Length: 136
Image (cartoon, rainbow, N blue to C red; front, side, top):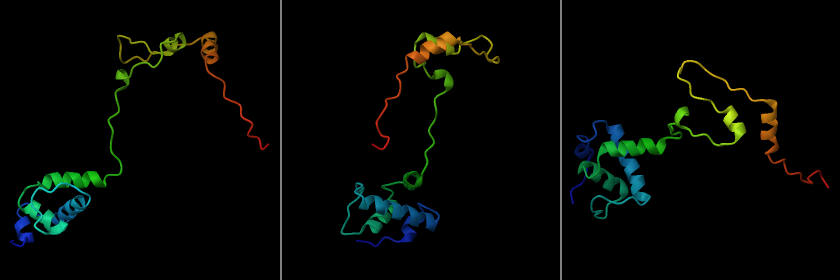
């Protein structure tokens, strides 16, 4: 079996530092149980990773994306638009508070709720459960 060298892989990944990062990431994936894309031939994971990069059985761009994704701590989540969120309740109190669509999108319209509607809505709420945790 021929020995794999950095020169075999440098035409796939131009930067030697990036090659080391990608090969070490792939070697960690192989150690974690990722499937091989070529025969192991009694080689250790770093050598198999370099052979995979050199033989282009796995692309450097895919490895780079996997490496970036594995190092991310925070992933941005697209929040839904406010207009597409449905109303949660169809009670009369919620209908009084729910914004009404107007033909003029630039004008903001506030709905008013009477005190009676507010009290009726509060009556439907369950009171907090009392516990005897006062140090008995």
